[in-house]
Image (cartoon, rainbow, N blue to C red; front, side, top):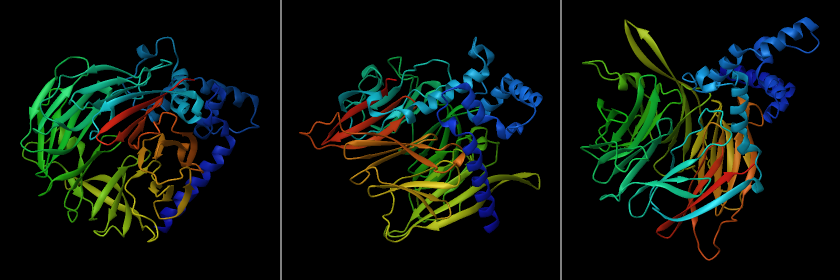
Length: 488
């Protein structure tokens, strides 16, 4: 463990040293600054070399092969071809995507416009139907899915604040909603235990499948083998189906009790599952064995040797790394445990190995968190009352943010941003590139300019993409959708 810590700290020091010489990269306001950010460490460029070396650097800096490699390393754009580029170069593509990623971090409150719509179902979560798509368009539409009190699935144009599609009124209440933005699909489960797939354009569902049991959790994802839906039901079974047709691919009995958590890793190689019974060990499955099962063989999996798991998150920057949060039955003891997953060929068979690389117990004076998130593989972020805390995976407090006056009541983490809400305000943070100090940067605070002072509501859901922030504000038994979009 000591050797690992020394290696991690040395890596952080090297990254910090590099960031000092390329500080302008955070703005990516010009091609020069983005080039400085991407290339010095890869080609060994240093100031003071001969002019011929500098010419060589300039030629490399314009190379399509290099910028395509950098794009593939950063984004899942293997299907993005020269045809998609049109008249643009890979360098222009890379810089354009970086500018889109950073625009939310650079925004100030006056750069946002907001739209408000009332009467959405207060129980249901929200989900983006649009994604941070890899295109050369300057302004893309953000589309969010919600459920109306009449039990219609609705799609909203965030920038315009208008409903652009709705399903027929459903006979049974929706109980779950997920989306697959790459395929423009929304998947619902209702209380009759029926899964439906919608393209949010046609009136009726593309596919309908009755399930034998209710499902607590669903995960839609896109792999090299195609799009799939994996669901966990109350009997402890995990089903995998194709999308959009819902063709049965595999079924595995993972637990004797219901499945409470189901999370796919960032590279779609692993699926984490955790049961509702806290004494049961969580499991990790190799996705390939779920979507391409071998006849007569159970899907490959391994148990993570830690009980009382209440939450888990994969690490976007280290795609085989997962951190679990466990809490004692009294809620007074919270522990974080981090594992690396690998596969190994042994005796002609593939086995999954889980290596615990770090753990720590939260100090007794800190409240047990409800939410957690991760990014670079070496840090964990979670809330504590009005504070946002960033710890190393070994238990060192790295940062504490005090941007809210009251307790944080909602939380959102993705590979670029962290959002927190308290009462009627939202705060935006951005992950620093490459795990550099200060790791997490405070960006923007949006106060309650939309709030009706005569009502007493709370923000019950928050999420964002590169160009918008969407809130669900719950008042009594109804909810309001507040949609912020950038106007820069």
